[in-house]
Structure formats: structure tokens, C-alpha cells
Image 1 (cartoon, rainbow, N blue to C red):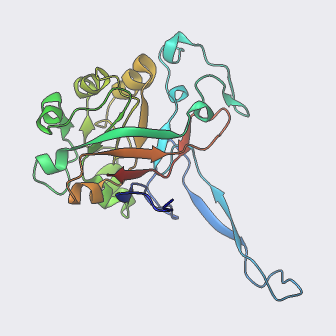
Image 2 (image 1 turned 90 degrees about the vertical axis):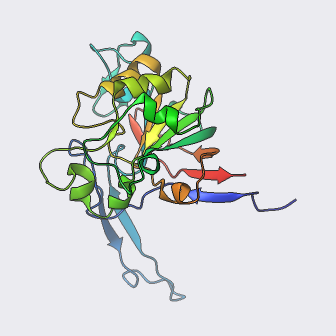
Image 3 (image 1 turned 135 degrees about the horizontal axis):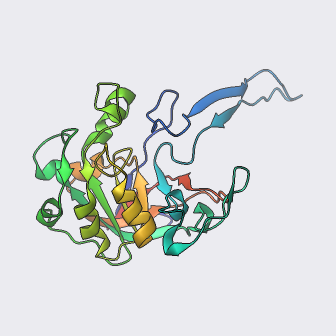
Length: 257
């Protein structure tokens, strides 16, 4: 039996590093080596280095649990959250999301518009999704490429569009989100920090997470898929089992037949 997978594997995750982009209401990613080589040396001369990490569940490439958003005090399904600072949110927490192996389609909106990256005020409409020529499979995943993954090494540009004032960026508004949800998808995602067009009142998050029970995946790197013209593939990602968590970092990959 072969130990290699058929087809090609695309890494869809962004790297973590000090100073990386993060949504302002979430804690930043902090990194420090806590032990250096040579500080503790074994009798055989061996030593090790190790680090300390601090980050939020919604920092970097990550998935939103259904517990991330509520409306009028209720989570998806009309559930009132059982929550505490130490215990998190019990209902719909991220540790209940099973390993993800699902068919996925890419809506390359930047490619459709023939630009490297969409303007900061660009609104993805249903007609843009229609024009991409793909349909998300029921129970599958729909990803939207805006081209903003290319700004990942420039936090100011990625988060605020370059002015350093307010979070902004392209993405779908509620009509496009409803176009996606009517297909019965498991999750929607994009290469931006907010998925939806921002600034907003987070109507898309409320619609997908609360009304429809659809997960959101953010801060993806979709550039290699777009470069190779890949539109359909198997999406694989494993959320961490963070009991009570409202989100989790993921390392997603695309498997292309």
C-alpha cells in the first residue's frame, strides 16, 4: 500500500509570527523562547529549546464555533449560553466540531474581477458568486478569495486597508451570505480577517453562525489554489479540542485529485 496520497496537496494556512495581523478585539499572538539550547545540558551533551505561546482562538487561520456569536442572548437553535470566563461557552463549543473532511469549492472573486486583490470597499454580491461557475455541495464548504492573503506580512494593510484607523476589507454582505446558506453548506471561509465586508454590524456572522448553524473559517491563504486554477477539492482541517472554546486555530489543506 502506498504511503503517499494521490493528487496534490495545497497548504491553506497562514504562518504565525510576532506582529502578525489580528482583529483588534482579540488578543495578539505572542511568542518567546522559554528555554535556550545550552541552558540545561544532559550528561550526553544533549539540550533542547522550547517556547511559550499566547494567542486567541480567533487569531491566525481559524474556525468559528457556533458559540462565537449570539443574537438577543441566544445561540444557534435558540439556546441560551452557559458561560463563564474560566469554563468558556458550554453549548456549541469548538471541541464539538469533528475533524473536517469535506468537499469544497473556491469562488475566486479577485480572479473574476481580474485584480490581484479586491478594493477595501468591494462587496461580494450573489451575482459574483453565480459568475464563478461553481456551486457549493450540500454539507460542503465554500471559500471566497479576495486576494488579501498577499497582505499577510503587512498587518496594517491586512486589517485596516492601510490607513491604520478602522477594520475594513472586502467580502460578502448578507445577500451573498444567504445565497451561500441556501445551499446547505457546513462552513464558509475566506482569506480576510472578518470573512464579511467590513465595517459592518456583523450581519453575516449572525446569519451564518446563529440563524443557519454554518461555521466560518478566516485568514486562509488561497493564492496557490487560484494560481493553479483549482476550483473544487477536498478540504481537510482539524480544530483543536478546546473545551468551551468559541474558536480554534486550524491547519487546513486542500487535496486535489
